[in-house]
Image 1 (cartoon, one colour):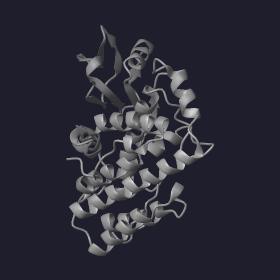
Image 2 (cartoon, helix red, strand yellow):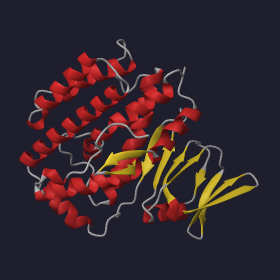
Image 3 (spheres, rainbow, N blue to C red):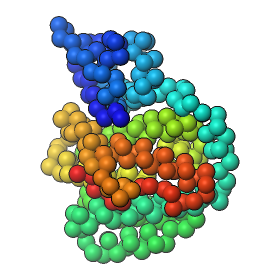
Image 4 (cartoon, one colour):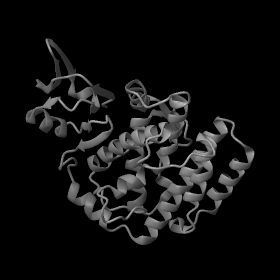
Length: 299
């Protein structure tokens, strides 16, 4: 099973050499077996990547992420034919009806709020906020029609990052920047797993935006978001801005262990376990088959 995350910041070229990734930097060359690599993050817009390597990365289901000039993840690449029975999986996905989608979305939101609760408990936040989130988790309805997710998020983020904190995708303050960065990396990892298991990433169950090519990816990652929130809290607590070292630290924590399915697994493995069980649960209409992080603490 692949496990290595390669973070490239100064390389001039990346190419294929006998089923190895060759990273070239001036006179220096580094070889890494492709079978070891889960993800490559290229945080240097001058790095040249060869076509042969791109094709081989797709064959090995290796996620390749390119960062933009602001050093934030901007593009990720995946193979078009990542699963041996993509038509069969897609045919089953098209059979998921609105009832099972709504029930699954309810379950995912409940898991997400429970994992937010575990973060607040771990950090010993106020009892009042914990009680309110506990109540919201119990009250989640079919399709989350009363938006308990949104109500819980406001309390949760204010407890975590202060009363004046407002969660925004485009904001550049230190916490929002780190959250956006962490979520983007998490999203790319989920996209890799969703496509590798033959699902179409556009057909979501809770997210159904016609302009979003990754609705299903955004659905699946919801219960993992508190894991990122916890890391951001721990890493950025006294930081003035999101620097390269802290970005690398965030990515490196994907190797941290989380409790899932009665055992400890790295977050990368947990993502795969979640997606596999998600497919089984949806295809059989048995939500008890879903395997998910039992809390938001991955250390």
